Length: 415
Image (tube, rainbow, N blue to C red):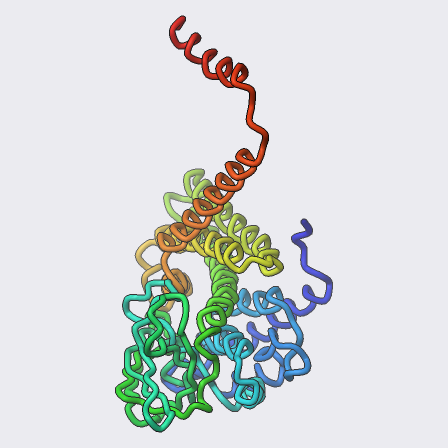
């Protein structure tokens, strides 16, 4: 398998890196207090970054998941906190999967132009990475409208959103795997209460409370039969994007730490001369390269026809890169000493950034469990298929059957 990127993608990477270095570094990026810079967002639109995953007939750039990850890796390296991941990846892919074609076209056109910010409000307090678990409900009233009731937790970019794509379980849908629809709700809709805050790395977020929020049938973006699969598909893209951002951040942590060890002196020499610290840096570099290799390998998962297998592969990447990020960030702080905890040092800001990324879309334990469940089911299916094939084979002669069971017993007795 070829893990290298094309020449065009290499040029694109350099362009994104140059732009981030000149305009998007966190210390030089003025925000409005919500962690959002409107000028940067409009520039993203003019560069075509907001529609990188969309086909050209929808106004997008017809890019791939690799192109999106190139952008996010550079964002992670430069501490960019503009809501590219929740808006241009998660929300855009969710809307791209919509069953309401007219509403989809209207939303995507405005989002790609940078004029409208729509975010997915799906996660709840008890979700913990499980996309199939939601308690928000949508009840159809006598006039045909839907009434939404429930809560949404840690909605990324929720404090700056103009509209929300709210997932809700249709009343009467008892199954955890069906009856989940997605509705478009205005940020100022009656009955919607929004509590805005910033995460520890400065990203904007919000908690939503929906109390008898009424929406028209035309506001249903995705019908109940396709809601869950659409959200799961978009979440896969978002998880890989989050992994790319983490790889970029880890790369910057290692480079920043290496430069610090070259200049910090103790006992008459610089810290990079001590073998124990060299070994620690080598371990951090190994974790980075392992994560980068896992990220590149997982790109092939998006050609998998089985969505369940793809989700298992994505979960494996998420869990592994989560663990690597924790190791790299923690050791970066330790090698910097006490000053690594200060906000004036980039290493402390990257530590917060990686801590937030680790918590998005479920913990490492959750994703390892998803991998284990998938491989357990795959093993059982293989075992059942083998047994089914054996039952279709002609029955063996009685003599042969006796001889195969007698031999092990004789060996056991002789032993």
